[in-house]
Image 1 (cartoon, one colour):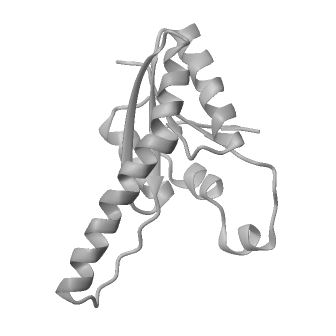
Image 2: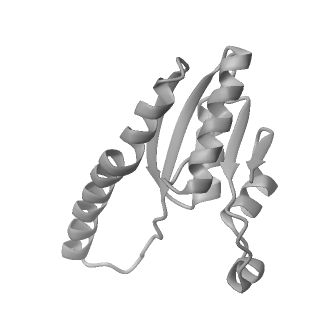
Length: 144
């Protein structure tokens, strides 16, 4: 069994702390890190063919922008630790997509950062961290 750690990464300070924690853990355990960036994407069922085409074009642009601005710099920083690093960018519901990635990659653990902010909206509607720990298929570490 490989020791692969999936890190939820969005470029925030909390995600940067989570990545540092995960790479440190991977170093100690001889594992690897998979940096996973998920772009929230809600399905629309009533779109015209033109709207669908425009939406796919925007999706490609957003993925390219995420790769350049968020994922590639994180990968470069993580690789400085000597740990094997992979990346993936997906669209979907963030917690569900991260869980699917963990299963597909046969991860042994997931790591996600939290920012410590507690807003009314997060309490009412939930947060990605809260959702992930409820549905994660593998142990999930929350980094403050």
